[in-house]
Amino acid sequence: SAGNSSWLEGFASPFNATLSRFASVFPDLDWHFGSVGTFFDCTFNSDVGDDSEFIEANPPFTPGIMQAMADHILRVLHYADVNK
Image 1 (cartoon, rainbow, N blue to C red):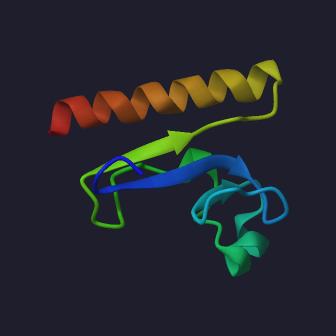
Image 2 (image 1 turned 90 degrees about the vertical axis):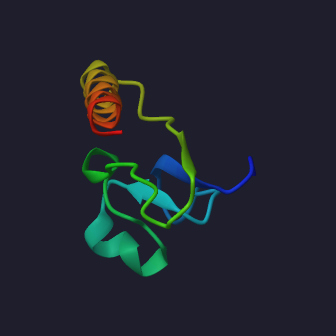
Image 3 (image 1 turned 45 degrees about the horizontal axis):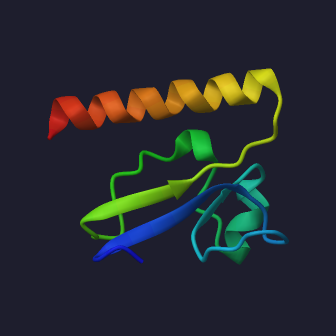
């Protein structure tokens, strides 16, 4: 861990998650196992009260999901830039 930070695995399931916090495609079922929701619903605002957040994102390698992931990351970074 890098100082006072939190880690989130962006595309995982209860079967393949390597981190304790993960986003999954079926959050309505996977929350029982620790899912924080879908990657696209995450705002990455260090909701656990830490100084920074690190995101590991390894999505399915399909053009639509890859583009949606990139768009979401850019939106979140822009929001962070404007609001901090």
